[in-house]
Length: 128
Image 1 (cartoon, rainbow, N blue to C red):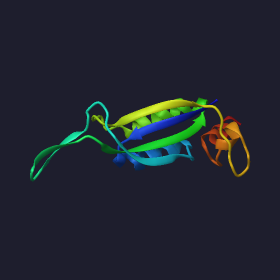
Image 2: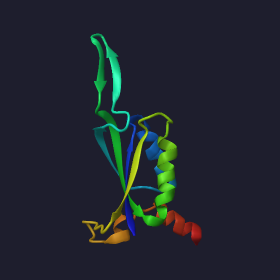
Image 3: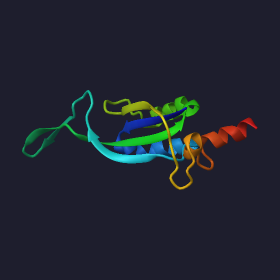
Image 4: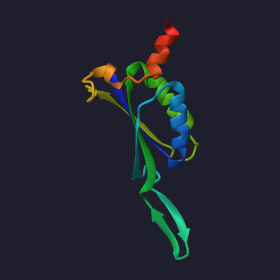
């Protein structure tokens, strides 16, 4: 079964997270610039005219579709690379994916989300 990971991380952690995912063989992903806030409700900044509240902070959303058996390793990688230990490190959501279709070839399901040298291909070569 395919899963979708939606990870919301700090902007300054994108490079580290992307590099860490590449190291384990995650090749395909989408990255979006988003704004939002969590439990902390934003941050208070001090300026020349006093303090003010910024409640919609810039974040990065990473979307990855992958095989269910790669889920735990991928989540652990995102957490390790994305963690600062401070409030606002982000969240990871996991969704089931009913179907995937590669438009160019018509491939469906798992085959549609495979990439040369990806995590599944690496694991298959290691098992052989």
